[in-house]
Length: 323
Image (tube, rainbow, N blue to C red; front, side, top):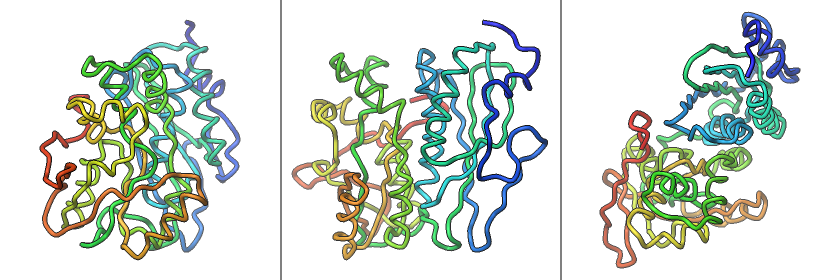
């Protein structure tokens, strides 16, 4: 480990890249972006802290990927197109091999979605990573959390639960097979943001959210802001083979429905959209599963095979307790 002469050297060495979709990127007091008329600017910020949001022994390239992916997922949930990101790094020390690997993971994903890093900050302290991401969505077309209507279907993309099962394994709450853990931990550190899906759902979905804090908790946010309730059928929740092996034990089930870190999209849509939504599975190559329905009332009820509500801790991930 070596010490650079200044933060400017660190930025120049690892994080200065051409910003193709910005007027001015890294290197000045402010970035400059040209926001096109008829578009709304979508902006989101996420902070990740070592020991709270990721394990300290995470591979830095995986961490670079996840750092941007979780922000892209917020953009996806709004149906927006990502364009610009800003990165703030608090580092305990300067470790060039670590930074090189982190930057690779970050920029590889940025290139996939045509996102330009246009600024940020660096300082010394406990490892903390903050990304602000910006994108555009046609005025009035953004997906929001407050549009769910009684009678709407509840859908989810992909599979849920693998990332949370990896975390539960690390915390000793469940035991995964070695191979299962290796697969599950990659879902934790290399989530796939559903950007194309979010854009395809504009004008079709009535509400949407990304599953960062847990399926039940995040659907609960939609219900609260929309003034409705929801039922979710346990047997309809899509899980991987790993999830299926832990679906019938309490700790495994809790991780799957309440653990979070999936970064899939949960959304609502009218029943007459079922065929159009099913078509998206073929067009985008993303499995979409109808798991429940919006009802009158409050909160989310998880229904077992007998159709009766199940009691489960659905509070979701707590960013202050780290659970």
